[in-house]
Length: 364
Image (cartoon, rainbow, N blue to C red; front, top):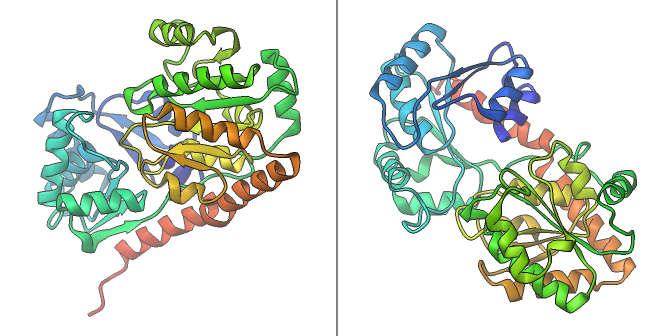
């Protein structure tokens, strides 16, 4: 999504950009195409190295002759970086988007790829851009060349993601949620990293403690056909107050309808987009201490340990119990923090300077 945002804001311009996916085009790739950007898919199968794709990419780069190559995440860093060198030693910027490579949670091939990148980081990339300070620290410890890494956080369009009384009323009417009912939400795909199990456990505790409270869940795989999710909700007896919406195109409006947003990821986050988007909508967040979540939230929300449903529920309950005046101030503080530190215009400018610095001739 950050790649999409950069292209949507003209870095580089759509007629100068070429995007290559190692696998398929995917949902985001289709959105990038709608901008007018060329998107090519190499058709690699996940978890299966394919040397032919490397040569196809190198041939494409020889034909296009880009000014520079920006790769995005480990496999693209490795394949794209090597292909760029084979195509004529093109300038390469690697992208680090993840902050955790624990063997229990990451695929073996991903760990091997990241370690290979660490060994090659002194020779293949000219620069490395990391989405978070936490990711930079972890990758420096892994062996990445610390002299090449620069942190540029994710950015958010604060005109798209903003508080909206109209959206709040419309979403609550759609879901038949009474205005006075507290709403707690999570926007995340169904994946072990996102730890929906802990969210559901915390939701059960909140329901038993507060009585009426509703929960909005949306994201890929988070829908009524998800039997595992439904079983968890049944175990906590909260099926009647959970709105399981699947993937939605109106995420800014859904966020505006929430009183508290939750990120309960167990591991692996670099810079969680869901947190910045919720805060831009004026929604305070309760987050697990992963990636740069604590730095993003600051004093506008709460941070708890991963996997601790009791702490998560208590933190949400405290935010919901605040007075109207305190809630208003916290909402304004959350949005102000995104505007001041992470608005898309400023982040786009940082990327533009990053790329221009790579293309600028070295002194002497």
